[in-house]
Length: 329
View 1: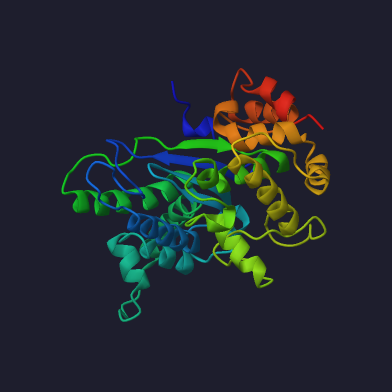
View 2 (view 1 turned 90 degrees about the vertical axis):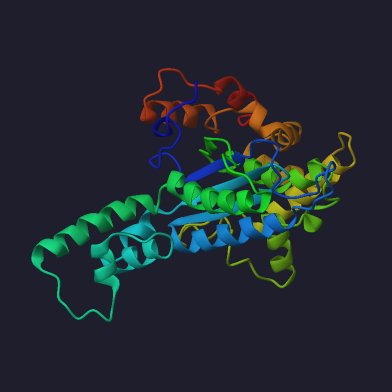
């Protein structure tokens, strides 16, 4: 039986989450239907455009993404502190970029309406803005805002009705640096592992391609949560790891996966893995079979026990695999 969201998400433990959403009825997100010969590649543009739009509205950043033939992978980061800084007006303005809001919030945001609001109406506005604040850092609302418009657009194109996505998206809490980076690499290497692309830099509509293209110019993509490096702990929320080290890990792993055989990761990449307390053998397992190794939250055994206690789980699931794969170096 699927766990309720309250037992899958705990912002007290981590802001990072792996999300996977799959289509139904053999619907396509991209690629070519071998039966009809119809190409669905343009749908990847729909998804990526909507994804980046939502990241500008919600207080949720994108760490990694990959659009596959019939499913979508995301690694998201919820920025709770950012929401606290938003004024009532900014919250309502952001909400109106996606939804109509109420008649009162529309009146509040309408600059052409000079009619002042009374005390009771202003209190209602504040109460509504508090609700919107919670929704704008809620992964379920983020996924709803992503999936529903895509489903309607795809159904119109397919000239049909009904569900386009499975009813529930899969959510996994990523409790520490090893879990986060191995999951990001797993997502970034999806097209390489599936044989859709020969190398990470040729993997269209993925975060790794955007990061590589920006890195060539000495930059980081504005649409993605940046790597801040180990030495920048005082900086705002980001991925506290070296971008160059991460690109090295993904490149080395991708070469091995693409060769369809178990190779050897070079010594430089092994040194990076040692800092993550992950052996090279287990790194390959994680970046190949991440979702089958872990079905729930991901992290070291210690972090998993803390997470289970905070979300009210009586048993700590995945602790054996955590001890094997993430406490191994």
